[in-house]
Image (cartoon, rainbow over all chains, first blue to last red; front, side, top):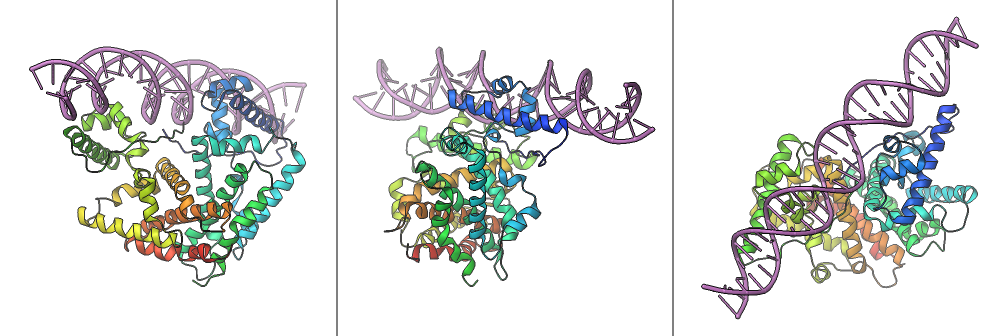
Length: 209
Length: 209
DNA sequence: GTCCGTTCGTAGAGTCACTCTCATGAGAGA
DNA sequence: TCTCTCATGAGAGTGACTCTACGAACGGAC
């Protein structure tokens, strides 16, 4: 059975008590889940166990994450509003835009998270590439991202077909770069891989239609 | 629950009685399934019903197709041997190779299948883009295809990262072209969309690393 | 501080995709 | 014709995911 879900994520900077609890629960569930996955493997852990370990009901886990895979693939992209996305993406240079986003993300992550292994993002990303069903869910997220950026990477005079190809190339090219980063044990920053790997794609946006 | 499956498909030109029956069963199951899906929608049909309509046991459906989505996404690529693939793909011009494969496929399909709507490939492809879980399964197939062609599209001096990006761009670019073809109601042959859409990707293999 | 409406987590039952094991029967080879 | 092989079917089981109330606590209004 292959399910697809869209989940509403918390609004940024929630202030109420209720919202605070929610944010905390989300974090707790994700951490407990990751602990269990690391300990016994993704398939061997049930949602019920995760819920119990997080002291919430299974229904709550589904409400927050939609699917088991959603526990790992908390899609950054999906939570972005279309307007925010428009501000981030420059149709003239989508590769550069992506690169900037990756750099910003890495910088932000470097501040809040412990750099040692066993911590994010390593811990999660491992499953993206090792656990087939998670990889699939991640692919689906990227597919959705491609659809969303489609209008943003379409330059004047570019045919719709080429625009679609371009969007997919960009997004799944990022996937490829990320995988190489993972396979290299993350010795260099992700941005390096994206920059080097996607360089040839720049031609797509500088060639005449 | 998101499952991933690899299924062994029938060897080409099976000669025995047993094998013949098998091939026939596979066709029957797929057709009955498609009938039911068209009639009541993908989600509303259970494997049990498909099995009953095809006069086989549910276990057999799973044996042949692995998943419910597998009934629609009978991956052409997965059934190809690596050697065959190597003969088909020219590392100098992967886009051209893909184009040739698409043209051959369309030509072959044009002979055996009725051209009118409601017949393949239209009937099946509709689900690729409309049914989320099927779309996901198709993405996964393409992802696997990208991994398989990786060594075949790597030219001398191309870094591994760029090779990965190239493979993904090619395969998911094809996805994009196919979707545009679908959205256009298939008025022009698929090959046209692939040719036009992937044209800018040729630069990837003609640019210096 | 109290009351009310809304929101949100929980309980519980149900569906169905998918797995596994085992026994049987029918093709395939001698 | 006999036996070996192996695919099929039967049946039980697992667990992801859904749906429908229900109850409680939050937040605002006064």
